[in-house]
Length: 177
View 1 (cartoon, rainbow, N blue to C red):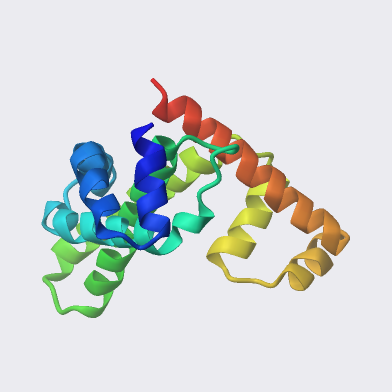
View 2 (view 1 turned 45 degrees about the vertical axis):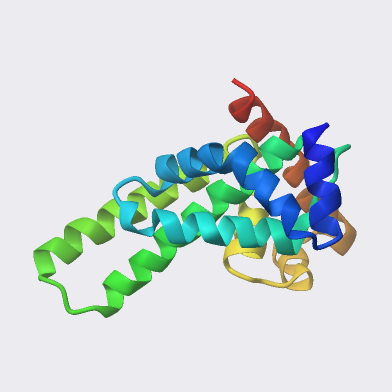
């Protein structure tokens, strides 16, 4: 019932919805971010703010028939934390840190990001993983992916759609412990 009220307020751009959301879910959001940020605790507060902003801006993307509000929030928090890892990694690559520290931090973060990605995509077949990576990480167009994989464009869309559903279902199992 509270979730419906939060969603209703946020859709109407009423800040009261964010107040209720923060009261209800701030600890959960923070814990999800803490798990996925790992050693990058100094980015935690900023990441929480970005998650809250993403919820505010993308509330229309929540579909109650596909997911619970709690799990939708957790997924946003998880992916924002992964984005922060990437952001931190790119800062390391451009800064002038001691080379040994750079090497260790850079490789550790790359491994953590790769592990997160593998865990998330683990429920997909290898072909579907490849398509997801090409589309969502390498920013290739649907047409290019279809040509490269020798598939119909509609098949690529179907694989992405089914893949999202599988990932969502997998995250629900993870988050619903």
